[in-house]
Image (cartoon, rainbow, N blue to C red; front, top):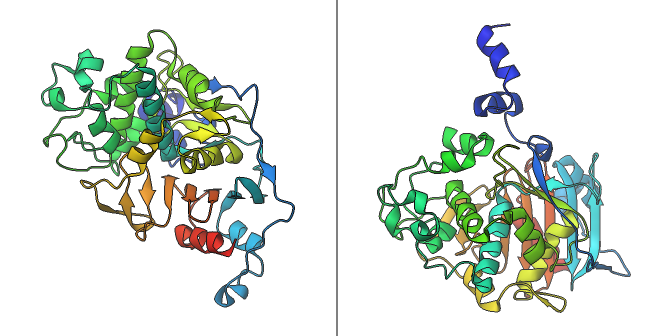
Length: 366
């Protein structure tokens, strides 16, 4: 074995060793990192199950290949699929070794939870408002050129002007680094904040630092549990990945892992304008602001084709009939408010399915 390869294999605690050893992330990603637990609610709000399970008829063109809907899901790498109608489970399937108790990685859907947590912090007065300057919350960034004009709003909307190219080595380094704080401070500001949208995970990780500095000793995961996870009535424990055990920094942009049913609560929470049962978790004004179309980002190209960008880490279908959070390699929480439907899908890739179109057809059939 070449000496360099041997050293990489021995160094799974360093960023390039991790990149080589784990390579492309999979649904096993929660096992890659040390994590900080987030405990289930002491009084979970369990979803009711509909008296009759929904059935989804196959298109004639699909029947020859996929005789049943379950076979379509399985053949196209789905591992968990959950449909709620009127807040009740009407369809639930798991495949492979995944079960209703399996914690699955949210990947970039973590960003939507992170933005909601910032809303909690603003509501609690920990953060003054989205217009608060980043350097006033994270003074260590004050000497960095261009950072003085960045606000928390710019980070939430990814209009900070920070030069971070997601689909490059930079994205992998941020994901696998063992020192997220130092890594997050490495990037230049190359555009005036508030003038240009550029998708970049570093924006959300800098929000971690803002939260951490204002919590004064409580971990971000602990605040998430107390202020968000417990109030939404989570049924199962979750966790946030850490950059390393020694640094203990939660990977806010991509590190949440939870069960499919508990991910569905995000959709239910937003369609009920920040309430889960009798629990007011988020102000309705924050939910409305989160979902509003972002005029700077506008229409963006994604693996789901062209979609509209919401302000605080949501996407909208072009027809604006539904909004969704999405994560790397085909993870979704999809909400159709008019039809009162929430759909959760987790998989090891997209297969050959246009998932948002399929979700729309499912919602229309209920």
